[in-house]
Image (cartoon, rainbow, N blue to C red; front, side, top):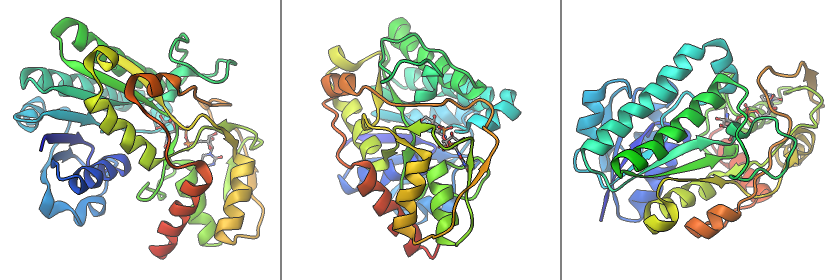
Length: 314
Ligand code: UD1
């Protein structure tokens, strides 16, 4: 049994990781400041975890949180492209300064490995598809820059201090517990909620933008594999975490119409600043280095997600 520290445990991905680890009999400690995480995401598991309400920017709290941990799954972030465009300083503080604090604390506590929630937004709007890790990054939004900077910090801590790190470039992770309620929420959570309520969703742009939408179970699996993959293959590396398939927002809207029973049409609005047009991953590096294979496809994931929100009374 190992002790895992999850930063951002109140978030959608952090709380999903916590559940998966508990079900495997592992020990879980978590921190969150509830800037974007939600207490209800961990309410049911609170008794089984060592939870501490703390901010990443509090180095002392991060040092205490890392003490005795075997692995750190660093998920905490302000995960929004448009929010970072409005508030680049806030994005940088949480997403870069916060990460460096976690790394310093993890290094000093001699944790075995830090796995980081990096972002596919690092690739930017380069026309090449699919995106592979050998490509030069080309971030557009302050969020993408911050996520990329933190990825470099991960590798730097491996090179300079020997702290093992793995960065996982998430491609649009979705699933149960993703917050649908903020204007910065991920598109699938928002659309599912709106369509179940009979509200008209807005597509920003022509809807022909595409994403490699990745169901949460695949991201959870990638984190667990990243902790255990041999250091020679994984330490200091970054890998895409996705499905290797992309769908457009228009196609997604149609699929959601079938699943939710929403019969209206979407509204089309202005394209959103900082957005990229297409996103699709080459996942061969994660396959080779981590033994990763996506287990849940887009349609199945979408169905499970709609069922979950429906079960919550949307
Ligand atoms: C998402 C993640 C980001 C992650 C990145 C890569 C969220 C909130 N953001 O960014 O953390 O790093 O994937 O994995 O999960 N859209 C609409 N209508 C809406 C909302 C969005 O048309 O009401 C459009 C957007 O303009 C965009 C697409 O849907 O074209 C996806 O947007 P979003 O879900 O915010 O994700 P990304 O910006 O791709």
